[in-house]
Image 1: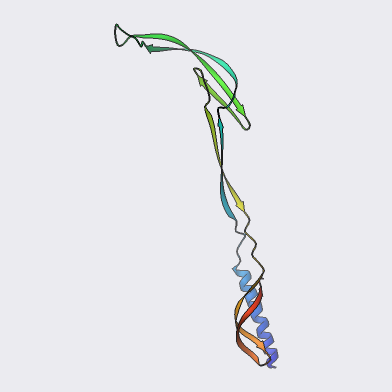
Image 2: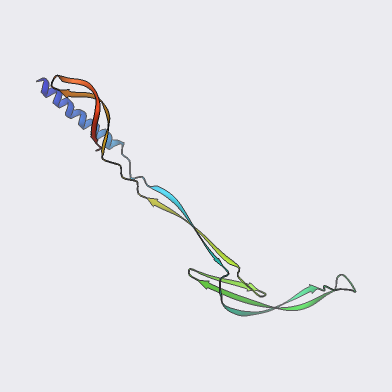
Length: 147
């Protein structure tokens, strides 16, 4: 009768430990990693230049002898330069337009699945063990299986 009680007690404790382990688990937790990619394009090649017209601008005279406020109206041509490459197209307008550089900074958040935990482990154990002399406390090395 005593062996039956011990076996039932052992089975009940295993079941309770299993259920506690199951209740402690929450949903799938994912790690988020931030990834930044910087692409630099220096001196991109101009594909074509298009004339947009001209603008009349009043500019001061550099060698003005008569008055400080002397100025002259100048006609300045306005152009649009188009630079194109892998993944970009840039439009630059103005007088003698030139694109010096392009910098793309792309930040991406990547969700990584959680790392799988080991199911088998070896470690130091302490507790009660079933021996030929009955239930006795013990300390030893054992193999554990994670449910």
